[in-house]
Image (cartoon, rainbow, N blue to C red):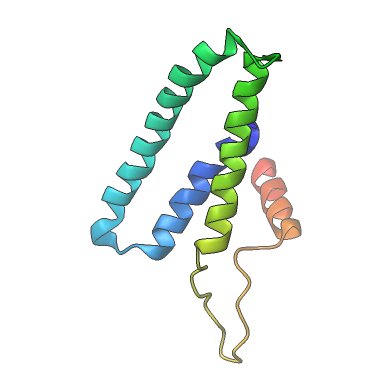
Length: 116
């Protein structure tokens, strides 16, 4: 859960850069960071007391994990169903331009940089 969630901030920053103008981008980044910190605080404040008790025969720490995991899945599905992807740039023939370089090109560039 932690490894996957750690990828969300770069993804969120990329989405903000795609969909907001420069005038509002700083505020959007601020709200992302505020939400991240608030969520971590709220999660710790709620999950810690729950983890120390048994609820309906289920150890509280398992229930806390289930609640946090279910919330993550629900948020992910909501975003996937409601967010529209920004339009991609097209080349002169009308085809969508590939973003970035291929994995092979990236590895070749990395090897080249390591040799120098």
